Length: 493
Image 1: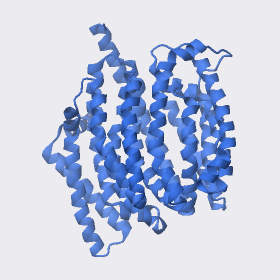
Image 2 (image 1 turned 120 degrees about the vertical axis):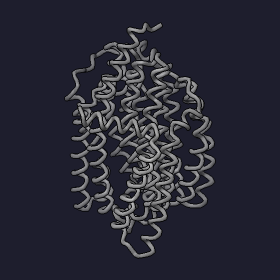
Image 3 (image 1 turned 120 degrees about the horizontal axis):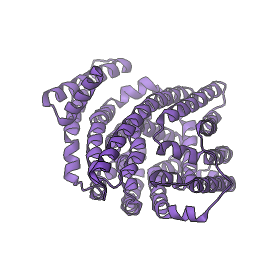
Image 4 (image 1 turned 30 degrees about the horizontal axis):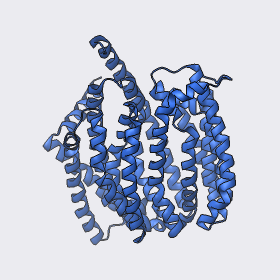
Protein backbone atom coordinates (compact mmCIF):
# COMPACT_ATOMS: atom_id res chain seq x y z
CA UNK A 1 0.00 0.00 0.00
CA UNK A 2 1.09 3.57 -0.68
CA UNK A 3 1.19 5.72 2.47
CA UNK A 4 -0.69 9.04 2.49
CA UNK A 5 2.58 10.94 2.87
CA UNK A 6 4.22 9.20 -0.08
CA UNK A 7 1.05 9.52 -2.17
CA UNK A 8 0.89 13.26 -1.47
CA UNK A 9 4.56 13.72 -2.41
CA UNK A 10 4.08 11.62 -5.52
CA UNK A 11 1.07 13.66 -6.61
CA UNK A 12 2.93 16.93 -6.05
CA UNK A 13 5.91 15.74 -8.10
CA UNK A 14 3.52 14.42 -10.77
CA UNK A 15 1.78 17.79 -11.02
CA UNK A 16 5.00 19.81 -11.18
CA UNK A 17 6.67 17.66 -13.82
CA UNK A 18 3.52 17.29 -15.88
CA UNK A 19 2.79 21.01 -15.98
CA UNK A 20 6.39 21.79 -16.98
CA UNK A 21 6.27 19.03 -19.60
CA UNK A 22 2.99 20.38 -20.98
CA UNK A 23 4.43 23.89 -21.30
CA UNK A 24 7.41 22.75 -23.35
CA UNK A 25 5.35 20.23 -25.29
CA UNK A 26 2.84 22.96 -26.12
CA UNK A 27 5.61 25.21 -27.41
CA UNK A 28 7.03 22.27 -29.34
CA UNK A 29 3.71 21.54 -31.02
CA UNK A 30 2.91 25.17 -31.84
CA UNK A 31 6.29 25.83 -33.45
CA UNK A 32 6.94 22.41 -34.97
CA UNK A 33 3.41 21.68 -36.21
CA UNK A 34 2.99 25.30 -37.28
CA UNK A 35 6.20 24.98 -39.26
CA UNK A 36 5.04 21.66 -40.70
CA UNK A 37 1.75 23.23 -41.74
CA UNK A 38 3.42 26.13 -43.54
CA UNK A 39 5.94 23.81 -45.21
CA UNK A 40 3.15 21.41 -46.20
CA UNK A 41 1.06 24.20 -47.71
CA UNK A 42 4.00 25.55 -49.70
CA UNK A 43 4.87 22.10 -50.99
CA UNK A 44 1.21 21.44 -51.87
CA UNK A 45 1.16 24.63 -53.96
CA UNK A 46 4.37 23.64 -55.77
CA UNK A 47 3.73 19.91 -56.22
CA UNK A 48 0.69 18.00 -57.49
CA UNK A 49 -1.76 15.67 -55.71
CA UNK A 50 -0.21 12.78 -57.69
CA UNK A 51 3.21 13.31 -56.07
CA UNK A 52 1.70 13.44 -52.58
CA UNK A 53 -0.22 10.29 -53.47
CA UNK A 54 2.98 8.43 -54.39
CA UNK A 55 4.53 9.30 -51.01
CA UNK A 56 1.33 8.24 -49.25
CA UNK A 57 1.61 4.83 -50.95
CA UNK A 58 5.17 4.44 -49.72
CA UNK A 59 4.58 5.58 -46.17
CA UNK A 60 1.91 2.90 -45.77
CA UNK A 61 4.67 0.29 -46.06
CA UNK A 62 7.51 2.15 -44.34
CA UNK A 63 5.26 3.30 -41.51
CA UNK A 64 4.26 -0.28 -40.76
CA UNK A 65 7.82 -1.59 -40.87
CA UNK A 66 8.85 1.26 -38.57
CA UNK A 67 6.70 -0.38 -35.86
CA UNK A 68 9.12 -3.34 -36.01
CA UNK A 69 11.99 -0.89 -35.74
CA UNK A 70 11.09 -0.01 -32.14
CA UNK A 71 8.93 -3.07 -31.42
CA UNK A 72 7.60 -1.24 -28.37
CA UNK A 73 10.81 -1.47 -26.33
CA UNK A 74 11.09 2.31 -26.20
CA UNK A 75 7.66 2.46 -24.54
CA UNK A 76 8.70 -0.38 -22.23
CA UNK A 77 11.65 1.68 -20.98
CA UNK A 78 9.26 4.55 -20.26
CA UNK A 79 6.64 2.38 -18.54
CA UNK A 80 8.98 0.44 -16.22
CA UNK A 81 9.61 2.13 -12.88
CA UNK A 82 13.20 0.95 -12.60
CA UNK A 83 15.52 0.39 -15.56
CA UNK A 84 19.20 -0.44 -15.56
CA UNK A 85 22.11 0.44 -17.82
CA UNK A 86 22.01 -3.13 -19.06
CA UNK A 87 18.32 -2.76 -20.02
CA UNK A 88 19.04 0.38 -22.05
CA UNK A 89 22.09 -1.05 -23.84
CA UNK A 90 20.26 -4.28 -24.65
CA UNK A 91 17.35 -2.38 -26.19
CA UNK A 92 19.77 -0.17 -28.13
CA UNK A 93 21.63 -3.05 -29.80
CA UNK A 94 18.41 -4.92 -30.51
CA UNK A 95 17.00 -1.83 -32.25
CA UNK A 96 20.16 -1.44 -34.35
CA UNK A 97 19.85 -5.06 -35.47
CA UNK A 98 16.17 -4.59 -36.31
CA UNK A 99 16.89 -1.37 -38.22
CA UNK A 100 19.47 -3.03 -40.48
CA UNK A 101 17.29 -6.12 -40.95
CA UNK A 102 14.23 -4.08 -41.92
CA UNK A 103 16.14 -1.94 -44.40
CA UNK A 104 17.39 -5.09 -46.14
CA UNK A 105 13.88 -6.53 -46.08
CA UNK A 106 12.44 -3.45 -47.82
CA UNK A 107 15.24 -3.57 -50.40
CA UNK A 108 14.11 -7.05 -51.47
CA UNK A 109 10.38 -6.30 -51.19
CA UNK A 110 10.54 -3.06 -53.21
CA UNK A 111 9.86 -4.64 -56.64
CA UNK A 112 6.82 -6.50 -55.28
CA UNK A 113 5.56 -3.32 -53.67
CA UNK A 114 5.78 -1.31 -56.89
CA UNK A 115 4.11 -4.19 -58.79
CA UNK A 116 1.18 -4.17 -56.35
CA UNK A 117 0.42 -0.54 -57.21
CA UNK A 118 1.62 -0.86 -60.83
CA UNK A 119 3.93 2.14 -60.32
CA UNK A 120 7.59 1.32 -61.21
CA UNK A 121 8.92 4.52 -59.63
CA UNK A 122 7.81 3.30 -56.19
CA UNK A 123 10.62 0.73 -56.09
CA UNK A 124 13.37 3.37 -56.07
CA UNK A 125 11.46 5.70 -53.76
CA UNK A 126 10.81 3.07 -51.10
CA UNK A 127 14.43 1.85 -51.10
CA UNK A 128 15.74 5.33 -50.36
CA UNK A 129 13.17 5.97 -47.63
CA UNK A 130 13.93 2.60 -46.00
CA UNK A 131 17.28 3.96 -44.78
CA UNK A 132 15.30 5.87 -42.16
CA UNK A 133 14.93 2.55 -40.31
CA UNK A 134 18.66 2.33 -39.66
CA UNK A 135 18.94 6.04 -38.91
CA UNK A 136 16.06 6.23 -36.43
CA UNK A 137 17.00 2.97 -34.66
CA UNK A 138 20.20 4.59 -33.39
CA UNK A 139 18.33 7.09 -31.19
CA UNK A 140 15.25 5.23 -29.90
CA UNK A 141 16.71 4.73 -26.41
CA UNK A 142 17.87 8.35 -26.13
CA UNK A 143 14.39 9.51 -27.09
CA UNK A 144 12.72 7.15 -24.59
CA UNK A 145 14.95 8.29 -21.72
CA UNK A 146 14.21 11.91 -22.58
CA UNK A 147 10.47 11.23 -22.52
CA UNK A 148 10.74 9.23 -19.29
CA UNK A 149 12.40 12.22 -17.65
CA UNK A 150 9.68 14.52 -19.09
CA UNK A 151 12.48 16.55 -20.67
CA UNK A 152 10.37 18.22 -23.34
CA UNK A 153 12.57 21.30 -23.38
CA UNK A 154 15.37 19.52 -25.22
CA UNK A 155 12.83 17.76 -27.43
CA UNK A 156 11.51 21.15 -28.48
CA UNK A 157 14.87 22.32 -29.81
CA UNK A 158 15.58 18.95 -31.46
CA UNK A 159 12.23 18.77 -33.26
CA UNK A 160 12.23 22.42 -34.27
CA UNK A 161 15.67 22.22 -35.86
CA UNK A 162 14.88 18.96 -37.65
CA UNK A 163 11.55 20.16 -39.07
CA UNK A 164 12.73 23.57 -40.24
CA UNK A 165 15.97 22.42 -41.89
CA UNK A 166 14.39 19.42 -43.64
CA UNK A 167 11.35 21.46 -44.69
CA UNK A 168 13.37 24.32 -46.17
CA UNK A 169 15.56 21.83 -48.05
CA UNK A 170 12.44 20.13 -49.48
CA UNK A 171 10.96 23.44 -50.64
CA UNK A 172 14.22 24.40 -52.38
CA UNK A 173 14.32 20.99 -54.08
CA UNK A 174 10.67 21.27 -55.17
CA UNK A 175 11.25 24.74 -56.65
CA UNK A 176 14.15 23.32 -58.62
CA UNK A 177 11.97 20.66 -60.24
CA UNK A 178 12.80 17.56 -58.18
CA UNK A 179 9.12 16.71 -57.75
CA UNK A 180 8.38 13.72 -55.55
CA UNK A 181 12.07 13.39 -54.65
CA UNK A 182 11.84 16.62 -52.69
CA UNK A 183 9.39 14.84 -50.35
CA UNK A 184 11.80 11.90 -50.04
CA UNK A 185 14.58 14.34 -49.16
CA UNK A 186 12.39 15.84 -46.43
CA UNK A 187 11.75 12.44 -44.84
CA UNK A 188 15.40 11.33 -44.92
CA UNK A 189 16.81 14.64 -43.73
CA UNK A 190 14.33 14.91 -40.86
CA UNK A 191 15.16 11.39 -39.64
CA UNK A 192 18.90 12.00 -39.86
CA UNK A 193 18.87 15.37 -38.13
CA UNK A 194 16.55 14.17 -35.38
CA UNK A 195 18.85 11.24 -34.56
CA UNK A 196 21.99 13.37 -34.64
CA UNK A 197 20.45 16.01 -32.36
CA UNK A 198 19.21 13.35 -29.91
CA UNK A 199 22.74 11.93 -29.65
CA UNK A 200 24.25 15.39 -29.19
CA UNK A 201 21.83 16.33 -26.40
CA UNK A 202 21.79 13.01 -24.52
CA UNK A 203 24.14 12.14 -21.68
CA UNK A 204 23.50 8.42 -22.17
CA UNK A 205 25.71 6.32 -24.41
CA UNK A 206 25.36 2.60 -25.06
CA UNK A 207 27.74 0.07 -23.57
CA UNK A 208 28.90 -3.02 -25.45
CA UNK A 209 26.54 -5.18 -23.42
CA UNK A 210 23.50 -7.25 -24.28
CA UNK A 211 21.26 -9.30 -22.01
CA UNK A 212 18.55 -11.67 -23.18
CA UNK A 213 17.10 -11.58 -19.65
CA UNK A 214 16.67 -7.80 -19.87
CA UNK A 215 14.73 -8.17 -23.10
CA UNK A 216 12.65 -11.01 -21.66
CA UNK A 217 11.57 -8.82 -18.74
CA UNK A 218 9.92 -6.42 -21.20
CA UNK A 219 8.38 -8.98 -23.54
CA UNK A 220 5.14 -9.30 -21.55
CA UNK A 221 4.53 -5.58 -22.02
CA UNK A 222 5.94 -5.33 -25.52
CA UNK A 223 4.22 -8.15 -27.43
CA UNK A 224 0.58 -7.10 -26.80
CA UNK A 225 1.56 -3.48 -27.45
CA UNK A 226 3.24 -4.49 -30.71
CA UNK A 227 0.14 -6.45 -31.70
CA UNK A 228 -2.12 -3.50 -30.91
CA UNK A 229 0.07 -1.09 -32.85
CA UNK A 230 0.28 -3.47 -35.80
CA UNK A 231 -3.47 -4.00 -36.04
CA UNK A 232 -4.13 -0.33 -35.38
CA UNK A 233 -1.66 0.73 -38.05
CA UNK A 234 -3.16 -1.41 -40.78
CA UNK A 235 -6.64 -0.30 -39.86
CA UNK A 236 -5.63 3.35 -39.96
CA UNK A 237 -3.96 2.82 -43.33
CA UNK A 238 -6.22 0.27 -44.97
CA UNK A 239 -8.15 3.15 -46.53
CA UNK A 240 -4.91 4.48 -48.05
CA UNK A 241 -3.91 1.05 -49.39
CA UNK A 242 -7.25 0.41 -51.05
CA UNK A 243 -7.60 3.92 -52.46
CA UNK A 244 -4.07 3.82 -53.88
CA UNK A 245 -4.57 0.35 -55.36
CA UNK A 246 -8.05 0.69 -56.83
CA UNK A 247 -8.63 4.42 -57.38
CA UNK A 248 -5.12 5.81 -57.97
CA UNK A 249 -2.44 8.11 -56.59
CA UNK A 250 -4.31 11.32 -57.38
CA UNK A 251 -7.33 10.27 -55.30
CA UNK A 252 -4.96 9.12 -52.56
CA UNK A 253 -3.23 12.50 -52.72
CA UNK A 254 -6.56 14.25 -52.04
CA UNK A 255 -7.53 11.81 -49.31
CA UNK A 256 -4.08 11.87 -47.67
CA UNK A 257 -3.92 15.68 -47.51
CA UNK A 258 -7.45 15.83 -46.09
CA UNK A 259 -6.53 13.30 -43.41
CA UNK A 260 -3.34 15.20 -42.55
CA UNK A 261 -5.20 18.49 -42.20
CA UNK A 262 -7.84 16.80 -40.05
CA UNK A 263 -5.10 15.40 -37.78
CA UNK A 264 -3.37 18.75 -37.35
CA UNK A 265 -5.55 20.09 -34.50
CA UNK A 266 -5.40 16.66 -32.86
CA UNK A 267 -1.61 16.51 -32.93
CA UNK A 268 -1.42 20.15 -31.90
CA UNK A 269 -3.57 19.81 -28.80
CA UNK A 270 -4.35 16.27 -27.66
CA UNK A 271 -1.06 15.00 -29.07
CA UNK A 272 0.81 17.40 -26.79
CA UNK A 273 -1.00 16.19 -23.72
CA UNK A 274 -0.87 12.53 -24.71
CA UNK A 275 2.92 12.55 -25.09
CA UNK A 276 3.29 13.98 -21.59
CA UNK A 277 0.60 11.86 -19.90
CA UNK A 278 2.01 8.40 -20.68
CA UNK A 279 5.28 8.89 -18.78
CA UNK A 280 3.41 10.93 -16.14
CA UNK A 281 0.69 8.30 -15.63
CA UNK A 282 3.35 5.59 -15.53
CA UNK A 283 4.95 7.34 -12.56
CA UNK A 284 1.65 7.12 -10.59
CA UNK A 285 0.27 3.93 -12.17
CA UNK A 286 -0.91 2.56 -8.79
CA UNK A 287 -2.90 5.69 -7.91
CA UNK A 288 -6.14 4.95 -9.82
CA UNK A 289 -8.08 7.77 -8.17
CA UNK A 290 -5.53 10.34 -9.33
CA UNK A 291 -5.41 8.98 -12.88
CA UNK A 292 -9.23 9.09 -13.15
CA UNK A 293 -9.37 12.66 -11.89
CA UNK A 294 -6.66 13.85 -14.27
CA UNK A 295 -8.17 11.97 -17.22
CA UNK A 296 -11.58 13.61 -16.79
CA UNK A 297 -10.12 17.08 -16.43
CA UNK A 298 -7.75 16.74 -19.36
CA UNK A 299 -10.35 15.16 -21.68
CA UNK A 300 -12.92 17.91 -21.11
CA UNK A 301 -10.20 20.53 -21.62
CA UNK A 302 -9.24 18.95 -24.94
CA UNK A 303 -12.90 18.71 -25.98
CA UNK A 304 -13.43 22.38 -25.12
CA UNK A 305 -10.80 23.30 -27.72
CA UNK A 306 -10.90 20.56 -30.36
CA UNK A 307 -14.66 20.00 -30.67
CA UNK A 308 -15.36 23.52 -31.99
CA UNK A 309 -12.20 23.43 -34.12
CA UNK A 310 -13.07 20.16 -35.83
CA UNK A 311 -16.82 20.73 -36.27
CA UNK A 312 -16.05 24.24 -37.45
CA UNK A 313 -13.53 22.92 -39.97
CA UNK A 314 -16.18 20.51 -41.23
CA UNK A 315 -18.57 23.31 -42.20
CA UNK A 316 -15.91 25.68 -43.63
CA UNK A 317 -13.93 23.03 -45.51
CA UNK A 318 -14.59 24.60 -48.92
CA UNK A 319 -13.27 28.13 -48.26
CA UNK A 320 -10.51 26.61 -46.11
CA UNK A 321 -9.15 24.34 -48.88
CA UNK A 322 -9.51 26.92 -51.65
CA UNK A 323 -7.77 29.59 -49.56
CA UNK A 324 -4.98 27.41 -48.21
CA UNK A 325 -4.17 25.02 -51.07
CA UNK A 326 -5.83 26.42 -54.17
CA UNK A 327 -8.32 25.26 -56.79
CA UNK A 328 -6.35 22.12 -57.80
CA UNK A 329 -7.18 20.58 -54.40
CA UNK A 330 -10.97 21.14 -54.67
CA UNK A 331 -11.71 17.40 -54.86
CA UNK A 332 -10.60 16.92 -51.24
CA UNK A 333 -13.23 19.30 -49.78
CA UNK A 334 -15.97 16.74 -49.08
CA UNK A 335 -13.48 14.25 -47.64
CA UNK A 336 -12.08 16.88 -45.29
CA UNK A 337 -15.58 17.82 -44.16
CA UNK A 338 -16.39 14.19 -43.28
CA UNK A 339 -13.07 13.37 -41.64
CA UNK A 340 -13.19 16.51 -39.49
CA UNK A 341 -16.19 15.10 -37.63
CA UNK A 342 -14.15 11.96 -36.96
CA UNK A 343 -11.30 14.18 -35.77
CA UNK A 344 -13.43 15.58 -32.94
CA UNK A 345 -13.79 12.11 -31.39
CA UNK A 346 -10.21 11.08 -32.13
CA UNK A 347 -8.91 14.09 -30.23
CA UNK A 348 -10.23 12.46 -27.04
CA UNK A 349 -9.43 8.91 -28.13
CA UNK A 350 -5.70 9.65 -28.15
CA UNK A 351 -5.79 9.67 -24.34
CA UNK A 352 -7.20 6.16 -24.06
CA UNK A 353 -4.00 4.45 -25.10
CA UNK A 354 -2.16 6.14 -22.25
CA UNK A 355 -4.50 4.53 -19.72
CA UNK A 356 -3.97 1.04 -21.18
CA UNK A 357 -0.20 1.53 -21.26
CA UNK A 358 0.18 3.11 -17.83
CA UNK A 359 -2.02 0.42 -16.22
CA UNK A 360 0.00 -2.30 -18.01
CA UNK A 361 -3.15 -3.52 -19.78
CA UNK A 362 -1.69 -3.94 -23.26
CA UNK A 363 -3.33 -7.37 -23.66
CA UNK A 364 -6.79 -5.92 -23.04
CA UNK A 365 -6.00 -3.08 -25.45
CA UNK A 366 -5.00 -5.65 -28.08
CA UNK A 367 -8.23 -7.68 -27.78
CA UNK A 368 -10.53 -4.64 -27.73
CA UNK A 369 -8.73 -3.02 -30.64
CA UNK A 370 -8.70 -6.26 -32.64
CA UNK A 371 -12.48 -6.64 -32.70
CA UNK A 372 -12.99 -2.99 -33.59
CA UNK A 373 -10.50 -3.18 -36.42
CA UNK A 374 -12.22 -6.17 -38.03
CA UNK A 375 -15.48 -4.22 -38.12
CA UNK A 376 -13.65 -1.23 -39.57
CA UNK A 377 -12.14 -3.34 -42.36
CA UNK A 378 -15.60 -4.43 -43.50
CA UNK A 379 -16.89 -0.85 -43.43
CA UNK A 380 -13.97 0.53 -45.47
CA UNK A 381 -14.29 -2.17 -48.13
CA UNK A 382 -17.99 -1.35 -48.48
CA UNK A 383 -17.26 2.39 -48.66
CA UNK A 384 -14.65 1.89 -51.39
CA UNK A 385 -17.47 1.29 -53.89
CA UNK A 386 -18.47 4.95 -53.50
CA UNK A 387 -15.03 6.56 -53.97
CA UNK A 388 -12.92 8.43 -51.45
CA UNK A 389 -16.02 10.10 -50.01
CA UNK A 390 -17.55 6.68 -49.34
CA UNK A 391 -14.37 5.49 -47.60
CA UNK A 392 -14.27 8.61 -45.42
CA UNK A 393 -17.95 8.25 -44.46
CA UNK A 394 -17.58 4.54 -43.61
CA UNK A 395 -14.48 5.28 -41.56
CA UNK A 396 -16.24 8.03 -39.62
CA UNK A 397 -19.47 6.14 -38.87
CA UNK A 398 -17.73 2.95 -37.78
CA UNK A 399 -15.27 4.79 -35.54
CA UNK A 400 -18.11 6.64 -33.82
CA UNK A 401 -19.94 3.36 -33.15
CA UNK A 402 -16.82 1.75 -31.69
CA UNK A 403 -16.34 4.55 -29.15
CA UNK A 404 -18.70 3.05 -26.57
CA UNK A 405 -17.04 -0.37 -26.13
CA UNK A 406 -13.60 1.26 -26.18
CA UNK A 407 -14.53 3.71 -23.43
CA UNK A 408 -16.16 0.89 -21.45
CA UNK A 409 -12.99 -1.22 -21.26
CA UNK A 410 -10.66 1.73 -20.82
CA UNK A 411 -12.87 3.12 -18.04
CA UNK A 412 -12.90 -0.23 -16.25
CA UNK A 413 -9.17 0.20 -15.60
CA UNK A 414 -9.69 3.40 -13.60
CA UNK A 415 -13.21 2.87 -12.15
CA UNK A 416 -14.78 5.18 -14.72
CA UNK A 417 -18.19 4.58 -16.34
CA UNK A 418 -19.06 5.39 -19.95
CA UNK A 419 -21.89 7.68 -18.85
CA UNK A 420 -19.41 9.71 -16.78
CA UNK A 421 -17.16 10.14 -19.82
CA UNK A 422 -20.02 11.23 -22.09
CA UNK A 423 -21.40 13.61 -19.47
CA UNK A 424 -17.91 15.05 -19.00
CA UNK A 425 -17.77 15.94 -22.74
CA UNK A 426 -21.43 16.87 -23.29
CA UNK A 427 -21.26 20.65 -22.79
CA UNK A 428 -18.45 21.15 -25.31
CA UNK A 429 -20.19 18.84 -27.79
CA UNK A 430 -23.58 20.55 -27.74
CA UNK A 431 -22.17 24.08 -27.77
CA UNK A 432 -19.86 23.13 -30.66
CA UNK A 433 -22.82 21.73 -32.63
CA UNK A 434 -24.69 25.00 -32.00
CA UNK A 435 -21.71 26.99 -33.25
CA UNK A 436 -21.17 24.79 -36.32
CA UNK A 437 -24.85 24.97 -37.27
CA UNK A 438 -24.81 28.76 -37.03
CA UNK A 439 -21.68 29.02 -39.19
CA UNK A 440 -23.17 26.61 -41.75
CA UNK A 441 -26.25 28.84 -42.18
CA UNK A 442 -24.09 31.96 -42.45
CA UNK A 443 -21.80 30.33 -45.05
CA UNK A 444 -24.79 29.44 -47.26
CA UNK A 445 -25.73 33.11 -47.28
CA UNK A 446 -22.16 34.22 -48.05
CA UNK A 447 -22.01 31.84 -51.03
CA UNK A 448 -25.36 33.14 -52.25
CA UNK A 449 -24.18 36.76 -52.33
CA UNK A 450 -20.88 35.81 -54.03
CA UNK A 451 -18.27 36.39 -51.31
CA UNK A 452 -14.87 35.00 -52.39
CA UNK A 453 -13.28 32.12 -50.39
CA UNK A 454 -10.70 34.03 -48.31
CA UNK A 455 -13.24 36.57 -47.04
CA UNK A 456 -15.82 33.80 -46.49
CA UNK A 457 -13.33 31.92 -44.35
CA UNK A 458 -12.46 35.01 -42.31
CA UNK A 459 -16.12 35.88 -41.68
CA UNK A 460 -17.10 32.27 -40.87
CA UNK A 461 -14.25 31.79 -38.40
CA UNK A 462 -14.84 35.13 -36.66
CA UNK A 463 -18.55 34.45 -36.36
CA UNK A 464 -17.89 30.94 -35.03
CA UNK A 465 -15.52 32.23 -32.35
CA UNK A 466 -18.10 34.79 -31.20
CA UNK A 467 -20.96 32.25 -31.09
CA UNK A 468 -18.92 29.64 -29.20
CA UNK A 469 -17.53 32.22 -26.77
CA UNK A 470 -20.95 33.75 -26.04
CA UNK A 471 -22.67 30.38 -25.61
CA UNK A 472 -20.04 29.32 -23.07
CA UNK A 473 -20.30 32.66 -21.29
CA UNK A 474 -24.08 32.28 -20.99
CA UNK A 475 -24.17 28.55 -20.07
CA UNK A 476 -21.01 28.57 -17.93
CA UNK A 477 -20.13 24.84 -18.08
CA UNK A 478 -17.51 23.48 -15.68
CA UNK A 479 -14.74 23.37 -18.28
CA UNK A 480 -15.37 27.02 -19.19
CA UNK A 481 -15.04 28.06 -15.54
CA UNK A 482 -11.84 26.02 -15.20
CA UNK A 483 -10.33 27.61 -18.29
CA UNK A 484 -11.40 31.06 -17.12
CA UNK A 485 -9.79 30.56 -13.70
CA UNK A 486 -6.63 29.22 -15.34
CA UNK A 487 -6.31 32.32 -17.55
CA UNK A 488 -7.04 34.67 -14.64
CA UNK A 489 -4.46 32.99 -12.42
CA UNK A 490 -1.86 33.21 -15.18
CA UNK A 491 -2.55 36.91 -15.66
CA UNK A 492 -2.27 37.54 -11.92
CA UNK A 493 0.87 35.41 -11.60
